[in-house]
Length: 593
Image 1 (cartoon, rainbow, N blue to C red):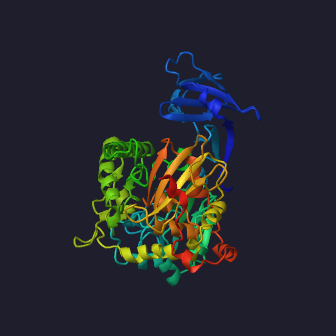
Image 2: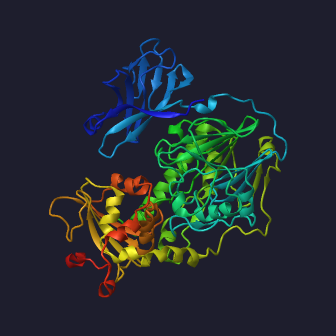
Image 3: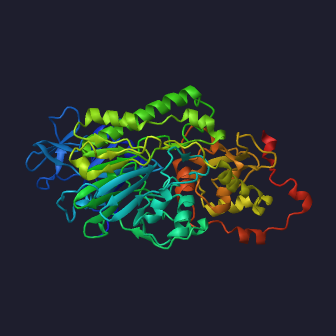
């Protein structure tokens, strides 16, 4: 098998996108003459090739369709509802292969084709009967599942200790007492992506000290999952970067396949595990796994469910961002997420569905506001909704240490699920805050921050410019009050200058208050800004109230793979005089306050 690939088959500029009418539009690629159909509605865009799956005929507008959703094949009059990608004449015949629609920062659009679209169909296997105890799935915590598959143990996304996203996320569920032993006994590990609630270096440090050679599989994303392994000082010796859409054979009975996310192919992945013809699908955090095309009727499906994994809108203030506006927005977004997940499960019809990867809490006392505001979905509510819309799907809401015996579950046995002992601890109530917060705050006293020129050095290293945005960065305490010896500066990303006042020209403006320990730790180690944004470690206001995807995407996913060379920086700067060191960090931006 060759690796799954993605190819841009049609590009439209912002003017062409703006000209698309509601309903069906036909577009031709001027380079190769191939035709495509784009459907526009209030929910966004859908697209497909202009090619009938029956015998390859071209579609034209169906003049009998008053809703503007249907096209008709010129060969045999087959009809396709482009809004659903289902053939309506003849009914229940085919499902049209969708193209991924990517909206660009400049308002343009790309249509992307995955090839093959359904690679799991290669080398199909007939399901064999499973014996009791042969396949067991144990929920440990958050996104961490242990799969016993015959004599192999396969572990997903082990975050078992420490925080994620700097100090913003902490484990909600107390993992079983032997969870680290289970980690170190695994035969293979899958890590879906680089976010620290999946790639947990405090957890992997334990593994590196006891079994550094365990095979760890990751997808071949453009941003490597272990991009900062050397920086982490964690010694792992058997990381296996795996091509997308190719079966990886573990033994005669066990294989798995990693797939990319359609929305975030640069960093996000999901996985299909096949044991004796029985498939387990784990979509993890993917927004649109495999471009929306997934295997149907798998034996077990797992996905995220909770929401709340973003700084928006909790960390925003000013303008419309009142507590009441935030509460209403969050309520609506969570409801939409529940409905989307339930609809996805209904369409895929897995035998069993398990929501997971949403069990985190903003436990640090300084984040009480976020904890109280960032209301998340409950797994029980999603499963109740699924039980209403997908009658043939059984649902499982596991507690830490709970075990699902897949063989028994497929036989509808009442003994398929083993819950943890009645006295088992379910929720964490202690997190070693000081240990991890002190490590972050150790960056505050780093030598580099005694020199104002670190600012220009850092943002030059970051490599983002030619964008009409001015950002004011303010270092604060835990309560987001400016600290007396902290930096307060402007960055003009149009020409990457650092003015003392905002420029006279028209420009977009962000004001970002960052907790000093986290911001300096991120700067010192060249970390991604997810720690600040997803970790709720800043407070943001913006004028106008516009999301600058290009800016945030760069600092969250596109920073250089190597950290800033601070040793070289310190060799270049003049030594600090004793009198200067008392006042380092105070810039003249305060003159415009």
